[in-house]
Length: 351
Ligand code: NDP
Ligand code: GDR
Image (cartoon, rainbow, N blue to C red; front, side):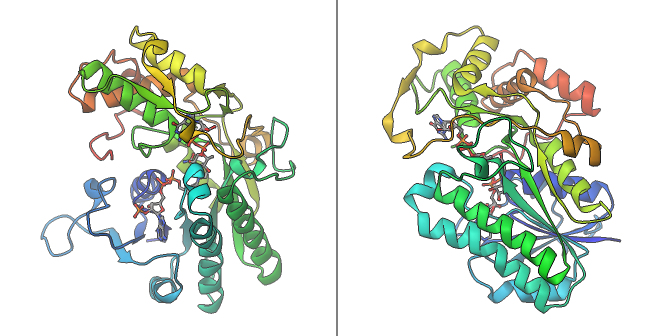
């Protein structure tokens, strides 16, 4: 049985990746942070208490924090995973302007702490770094693996650092270390303060009568939005290649926040102009205006292509948030997933 370690397993991507690897027969280990409240809601449905009789245990959780090296070496040395997916990060761009030093420490230095632990443990493992389209920042679209980085936030700068140390350990120590440069990907499990989920949750609350106004920032920025479960499949494929490399993962389609509002509110027959107000606190000191992936290399080399596009993604997220507040959904999103994925990705682990 192959063993994989996921940092950031409690996040959106970590939870989908854990499901994927378990379905492929992996023994999955996850690094979790100690918190005063439970932070495992996205993975509770796949976790079995080793003390309980019955279900075989294939998912193990370990306390650790990428802000310090102390537990990382122990965890990595003791588990000796064949694959490490490093997803842990302070992942919110706006928050990185409020907490720049912390973001540099966790999102940047966290990566070198893991790489050093791998090197010191003399471990032959495959390492995946969760790099981001934010690294392209101000670069002209479309962006691909050859596009120079122009980071426009402390978050993006920290990710650029992580990208380069990942390459450096590949070149310097001949480790199998790869970057997946992923464009935005969303789902019903998306964190509630990212713009897509903020919109779909607010829409559901408006229809449920518990919210009247949705406060947003810049509506003109454009993003290449895909569906998260398909992106974790790309992560896995990146580590199954013969050699380590770096790949851009995205849909090749870009839309503005305004278009997201049109699509989401239009889906349930509402006009967003009646509910949305602009609050300057959501503006960023420097904005990334236009991200659009050129994913031709990953399509060719990884044979990876997303099937869920913008229009469908919005329907999936709106249906999910409506059901969460107990409202009947139009159901197009649910139907898309049932038909395309032969089942319904679980919504009961949303946070
Ligand atoms: P989330 O914010 O949903 O999850 C982040 C995860 O990192 C959580 O499990 C969180 O734990 C964990 N974490 C945060 N700080 C620490 C720390 N100091 N030590 C250990 N764990 C920590 O992010 P996503 O799932 O959306 O993204 C996964 C990764 O991919 C991130 O690195 C992100 O920057 C990157 N990325 C994401 C994209 C996207 O569109 N989603 C696109 C490109 C890159 P806790 O639950 O305790 O907070
Ligand atoms: P992003 O995602 O910054 O692209 O980073 P986010 O959803 O936060 O912002 C997308 C765009 O929407 C604009 N926006 C708002 N954003 C938020 N969060 N809240 C608002 O109220 C709001 N109003 C307008 C933003 O200005 C921005 O232009 C995400 C994260 O998952 C990163 O970790 C990841 O690396 C990148 O995607 C790819």
